[in-house]
Amino acid sequence: MIPLIDLTKQYGGIQKEIIEAIQDVLTGGQYILGPKVKELEEKISERLGVRHAIAVGNGTDALVLTLDAYGIGSGDEVITTPFTFFATAEAISKVGATPVFVDIDPDTFHMDPSKLADKLSTRTKAILPVHIFGQPASMDTILAFAAEHDLLVIEDACQAFGATFMETEVGSIGDAACFSFFPTKNLGTIGDGGLITTSDDRLAESLRKLRVHGSQEKYFHQQIGYNSRLDEIHAAILLICLREIDTWNEQRISIANYYFAKLNHVKHIELPVVMSNRSHVFHLFCIKSSRRKEIISALKQADIQTGIYYPQCLHLQEVYRELGYDDGDFPVAEMAASQLFAIPMHPFLSREDQDRVIDVIQKVSERL
Image (cartoon, rainbow, N blue to C red; front, side):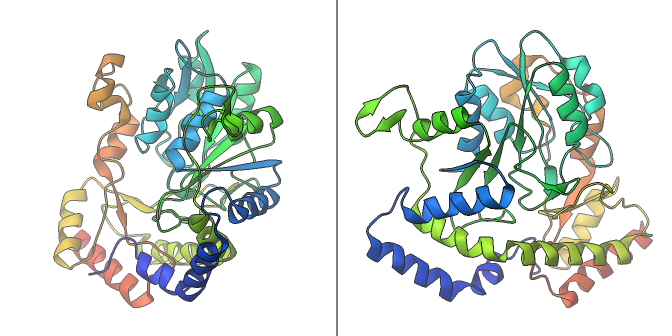
């Protein structure tokens, strides 16, 4: 099988370093929020040019803690996209606020900034754009709208480490940003992990307390917090991966460019659109097709794995029925949910395997 993502190849190439790093952690005796976590935070904050990086248990916690630290809660609204992984809206709900959805752009699948004004209310406190699939959202327009209406901008950068908007890396554009280090992310570990970046000193202080039960000093608690701390082993692994991330991203881009060259004129499919003022790191390579079912079936028969991202928009999820949304409320997002699918993409996808994927898509498209 040609897998959608091949983590064994990715981590296999650095396996010796990972084992040595784990042994160092074991002999060091500090297993949670130790020197490796501190080093990771320092290296990422330095890379992004922000004053603070706060490591937490996972990407979802990064979103929840950030919203909580900003005091967003019951009665508040946060504008976001209906076309993303559930955790984005779930985090808003988890702090007691209400997710308010706007439709997406048909080319990039990001929230459409031109629709923000329609969703603005006196209860709106923040905008939560998602850098979906590895390409940054339209941050200039979003930031301008936020500044005009005194709103926070929190980047969901969980799929886009290393991507840039107007030559500025995601994670350093909004008031704060959240990353996930889930294994399948372009920067991931062999378990869960997350991180928040910001240059807001007060926010960073609050986040550091929240991640350890609302405590600044052990056994003394200033607020109700969480248990969301990054393990030293994962930090040690991430430090190794951080050294490789630019190379891995370049390899993803090269693979994407080959797909573009070979699939550009194939019938019944639409390829991703890469905007000129940003870089795309291709966490996923998603194709749009009204004949998705037939193409996926042909790829499956050829032992090629695919994935559907995402099969149901957030506003139509059962848990959000109480918000009162219906089919057709966000037609662009709903169209994407019915037509998008991902084909194999990872830094170590061979040209031979990529040619097999391309050949199947070309042949099935000719038959349709």
